[in-house]
Length: 387
Image (cartoon, rainbow, N blue to C red; front, side):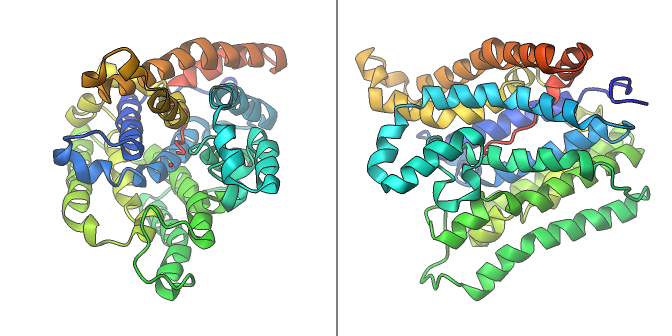
């Protein structure tokens, strides 16, 4: 069975809705609104959800492609490029003013390196340049590496027994945690206080931003997708898994997280809980229905745009004092959040989708590519950077 003729999988609207909540958590993490004490543990630790996006990226790709025989690498890479790059260029264009700040904040050598590498999606490989021009766009460097590898990774034969797949998932997760555990144990930067979100040593930036740091997370997603294909879970069982996962994530955020090291949390300490929630929401059940709330799903299709555009858009809105000029200060920052969501939806409808179809139509080998990629639109991978 060719990639073009593969049977279309059922959609997973609950995961699309979940992406909306995760993306908004990252937005609020970067630009925290007032009077949010009830959800402060979620917002203050929104950075942990970037890893969740990488997990879901591998999961959805595995879900969509694992049973396709003879997948065409060129078609796959073109589909990914056509989905991500037009919006990426739009984000850079809208953020052009940020280059003024970069010029004053960096050496001339670093600045021109950033100007050259960022449009090529390579800035994430240099820790000091990872946040150049668009602070969150370093995740695209990671995604590009993972997408280039995916057609080869999907050929690897995985076990079919659920317990072996679970063991493989946990093994990959533990391997991915090793660099972070070593950093925490050895303290190579000789930090006097525990690292936090504002710690910016070279080694910390390597752990946070560079593509190799997310290989195991992505592989965990691929393994989880295979596990999903062999599990025969009823709705009641998925409900139980989702409820337990949500309860455990809530306990981690509200009870245990303040005492857990930032380096380990950023490295994916909660990944097994995120995986359990993903499986729980990957079928029809009452919890999945809540996450499949239509407005959440609608915004969820534009979460890549929301993630990529939000940081610099909100920076520009704040620096331009638009709400003050319109005498709408009383409605801010919520008015700014709404504006960014509307911008993301517009970018999805008028840039991402048309540009993808145009690229596939002119560069794809078959017009069916357009229909195929549009059908997978519900599962746009983010990543988010997904910070």
